[in-house]
Image 1 (cartoon, rainbow, N blue to C red):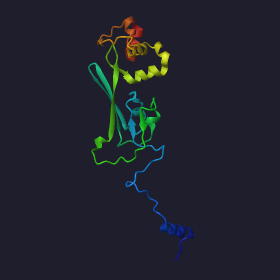
Image 2 (image 1 turned 135 degrees about the horizontal axis):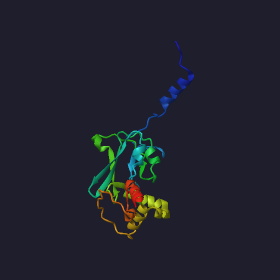
Image 3 (image 1 turned 180 degrees about the vertical axis):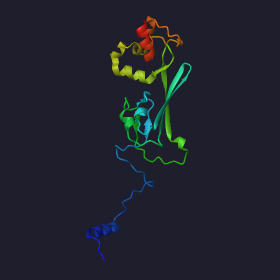
Image 4 (image 1 turned 90 degrees about the horizontal axis):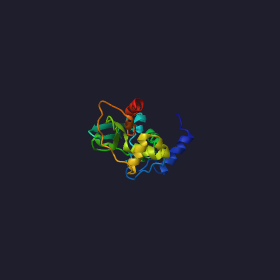
Length: 203
């Protein structure tokens, strides 16, 4: 017959007279440590709609869709908490560092439908004034102008966007140009990269 080791016997006696090691969750709320990676949230005020978070998400838990209806275009960003692995890549690669951030929420169990385990936001697009295709989200344009400051005056599209935001230039009505007849005046417009290249080459 083998006798237990003295260390194991000591631990067993200590456990009899001590309180349990387990926590009282869910009867008492658990407070995770400060750097705990929990449920991520979009913050619409700081999100610029660039979709960088969707591009770096290894689990493909963040998706985006661009919808174009006439002269109105929007980008819909959706995060699916049911397949998120809480790696933190979305927050680490966000240009503003505040557009999407991880919270300390860890209790994601629910009795609701799985479709409820998501968050979605929409961002308005700026359209090309030549072909009408989406260029960038409005908030991303504004963030770039603010980020680079006076250097934005070296780019025609950014300069025009800044002047319109400040109320110093009128917003022109987008008239589709299917034949893409470019002249020198077309360069002083907000254009997509394809139309910008053609306008510079053909004018």
